[in-house]
Amino acid sequence: MALFEAVRNGSVESVQDILNEVEDWGDAAGACGVDLEDKDENGRTALHIAAEKNMSDIVGLLLESGASANPLDKAMKTPLYLAAEKNHSDVMQVLICGDFDPMASSQVHTFHLATERNDTAVMEELLVNLVDVDERGCALGDKGESGTALQVAARNGHVYALEMLLWHGANIDAATTPGGLTALYAAAQADHTHALTLLLKAGADVNKLSTAGQDALMMAVCNDNVCATKQLLQHGASTAHADY
Image (tube, rainbow, N blue to C red):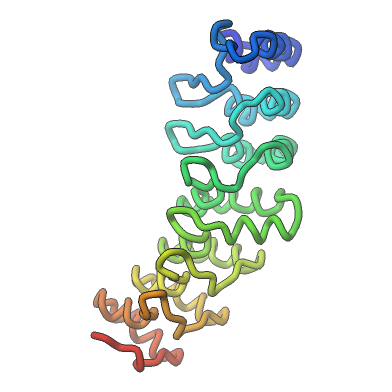
């Protein structure tokens, strides 16, 4: 496909010519044989390729022409994820300042995906390159299908990821909807004792209740997580809400 070839060759002029042709066709752009959302054998769009190859000019052109900023390849990675993997800060800024939506349409947040995979290098790149502190806080607080990034890290026992998120200002007691579950609740449920220790030492509310009236201790007990139960009791967990 002409667009893919032009992007892979890094030819800004060729890409611009192709995009001009697409614009000339308007609503009938598909008739010219170019679709900005076409994917290759790896499920990657032209934007994926440009982002991975550190072609910030081409990334900008594609976004200006209406390319989706958050397509997922077969590995469930967005262009932003690929740019972060390669430490392409300029490309990341173009994506973030362009049409980048922290919540991808598939509800797989780029940042949450990095957290889920314990890809701390990508996490750090994303944290460092987000536009400002307010946006950084917003990104950490967004709630996708996996919950907050902090909860994702806790649920998977990713201690270093937890430390990184807390250092960057993540809300330790942020609850997800609809259950109102916190990172501490997630760590207790999965019996990740190191994650529990970190969260408790960092000041997590040991007795915070979910919308169903459950706390981390109840979840640990109900899942027969003996170590987590002992830890929570040692840190002042109340048995007043027990229903077990």
